[in-house]
Image (cartoon, rainbow, N blue to C red; front, top):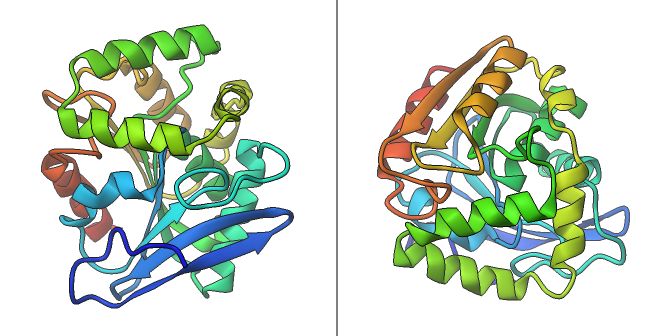
Length: 253
């Protein structure tokens, strides 16, 4: 049975696995209310990286371990961003959710955008935090270089959680990274029709300002916010400032 990782003490959480089309995700669903915030993590991560963020959120929250990450088993084939999106959409439908606020960080932002574009009937809002992959730097070398540059200035909490989850990500991490890099999220952005928040840390090299502006230009109903003195891990530690922006956005939906 998957662990309880995100739900506050004393709050009931539904925890389990969901399988669809040859892949399995792990979920943790807790809290109550409309427009649940659905958390999609970045590459090499898992839902546990959101433990600080969820301490600031309100209402219903659904944390997900994508296939081959966190506690979710490795799929037979590495999933594309589109297949990830279809899996997440099938899971949300299985739980009767048709008003999700999709919150994706890094690779998770690409999947969240695909959910909104491919399955608009189940999405009411979209949060793209530290969105990747910058259209000008689509290579494993470039992205690895940006990540290393970002980690130099990160907080110990980010480094510890990231290292643990990368190790759990398994030996297929390079294949997963390639699947992330070949994806062209701008094709999804052009089809997004829900209110969207684009969020970056001030010092995030993986989500440069020009790329974030390109995203907001592509999505008609969107706004941009920058979190001062943060890097790519703006949602992983010291996430209070980001959470405040996210909650303000959700309350306005």
